Image (cartoon, protein in one colour):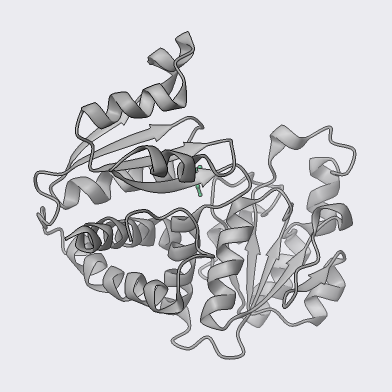
Amino acid sequence: RKDLLDLASLSREETEEILEQAKPLKEVFQRSVKKFPALKGKTVLMLFYEPSTRTLSSFEVAAKRMGADVTVFDVPSSSVVKGESVRDTVDTLQAMQADYIVVRHQMPGLPGRIAKMTKASVISAGDGAHAHPTQGLLDAFTLREVYPTEEGKRVLIAGDIRHSRVARSTSTVLKKLGYEVAYLGPGSLVPEVPGIARFTNFEEAWQWKPDVFYMLRVQKERQGCQFFPSVSEYHKLYGITEDRFRRISEEGLWVMHPGPVNRGVELCDAAMDYERCLINQQVENGIAVRMAVLYLLKQGEE
Ligand code: CP
């Protein structure tokens, strides 16, 4: 496989291979082995048309840990602002002999189009509402650390499902691995998906008995949309409030979030400090999983 563009097209075997490969690479990372030079001589270009903290920096750390040369292409100060097309930008990067292009863009499907334009391996770091494959993989890896087996485990994903690339990629990989998945959110923003339970009311979702509450970021850029409640209404209707947090912690349930968190909207402060809140573990695992993706794409080309 040359590229990683989504998780729907990844087989169960390929998914398992990435998750297995990430285990020893997490140890390499945690043991502070300064370099695991599997990508020595390779060049990784980071092409982010949208902001990012976690994905951008963890790809950079992952690639450098494996000895690659990394260039972060700063879109706001590049010729993109002079109107240079994606096609011409990619041709320019290709001329610099990029081995990987990690791309984030607001347009769904754009990484796939770039992949057809270049010999470099293209990895989607999030494209519109389409896919965020490495987020889905790091979420699956994190859940495997908590639960050695998926059987009977229930993950509730809450928020604006319809416009969330995280919801799409994470639910795709979790279903593939055998988890039970449900969606919760405002009715118009929760699609009907075969094999995924659907709730628009928190109490009904609670009765489903989730083991994990996966809270999506409220995309404030969508505030003002007629279908989306205000942030305070959202917190009351779908967020982990102080009251809901008490029930979640009494039951020993797990809390996840892809970040960045809007404190007091998706999660109250107490939920952020909860020992079963996996947010920081997700971030740390993001490095191991991205190391595994970079490593296995290189193996695939040899
Ligand atoms: N989860 C995630 O994609 O975070 P960033 O936007 O900070 O990369």
